[in-house]
Image 1 (cartoon, each protein chain N blue to C red):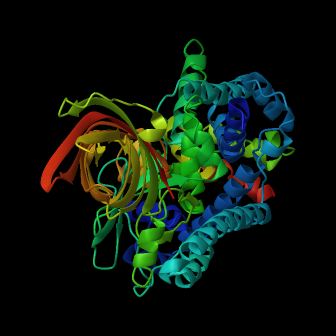
Image 2 (cartoon, chains in turn purple, red):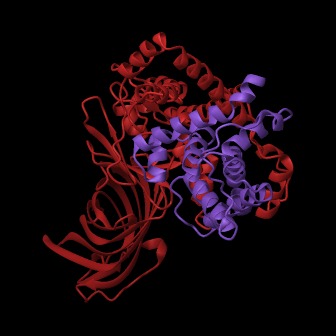
Image 3 (cartoon, rainbow over the protein chains, first blue to last red):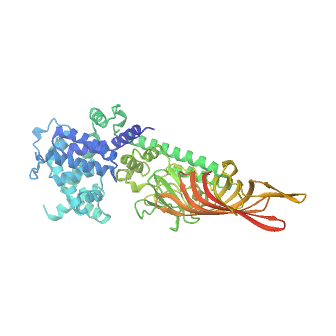
Length: 166
Length: 432
């Protein structure tokens, strides 16, 4: 098999396995809609480049997550757009009547404090265990538990009217 | 809201994520039984969890975005097949298909191997074991009576195979060529097992050196549950055919991360036979005693062929048939004169013993060897001593270059005489 074919097969396989989770992470962690897809593309290209440079990739998903975070940080370096409005608990239902679940969830998650949001996205969208999240974020397991449970409580209260309406 | 109530609310979400222990869960349910606010929180938490799952399943990159990624990557072909498939049914189908394909590969390869191993009578047994292996793909086996093959990754690339009593039966390393050298500690035999699935072979292409292929391979052979966090250290392999045959009754030749994951991959056992054929060539440099003036380096007159049995990784016994020139004269008396007829080509048949030392450099199959051979010829016994370097080109081929001393003892007029020669010895071995 030719080298290029080999490379392509490997890349397609990796894309097949991880694109959903990386895409979900981009959608839920990056508020700039235009940047979401750009960063998503760049993440996979950076994986390919790293492989071509024979970099030691111990865990592909961790690499993709790191690349996504780095690219996000670069993107927001000059335009900080993470919204920290932890005091907001409820979305006015009049603005959400026509929103589908995905849009609604996206907006609700965006309102979470960043450390809550990332913990929930890593667990519920990327499939990392609590222990893995603790390692990734270099925090204690108890902190992860707190972030996820408190984050979900906040999320529930944000979505309360939406759920009741539905 | 009381602190206790907040703590119970935290427990609700942790319970749904499976993060509470039994005592915490019991306390939570007891509290919920008495508190309607907690019950409502629980219902809403479950609803939120379902909504998160649904949201996740709907978040897939659109085909147009996937196409852009592949275009940027230089793979302009349609990316449809790479778009992830959502839904439990599709995942199940995908998992089953993967299991079937991998199991088929493993089963086919191992069955073929067993056919080759039939002379020792273990073929049929091993075949049954292999069928079992194939079925065990991606299954968890916690039964204490199940033969255990567990790994202990003491360092990044070490793989060890143990039995129920934690005896180490094999010790292997994944070298830079992605082939696995399995060493059976009991018999000290080295076995080479190359990872032979397509993807492994792909990863082996050194020019490409695709890290993602390596990671991918790791994921191919670990369980579905753990594939996301796979790393190169998660490589596992089947034991060599020899180990499987020898310990088929009490060992399951599959490596797993924690001893309860049975994950076969296909292994190419080529070159794992204990027998090899070697073609030796000699380049004579000196003859003793130097009264002999004839010197020949005719390749056809300086070769020997040997069939060797590799007792273990270091020792080999062989039968050698040689044709080489040693300075021998047939003397006949014609009247008062003696007539000397040079008989440069000497055929001899003998036994040899070769000892190979450990690799000079880790993971480079370059080794020192020494060899002795004793045989008989028409004129008398032949003795050969040699030493040199051997380099293993592949599972099957080994090249050697060394220096050789050959001696022939013969009788003449009731007196024992010796003739010797030294020279370079070069050989190529083919493992059967």
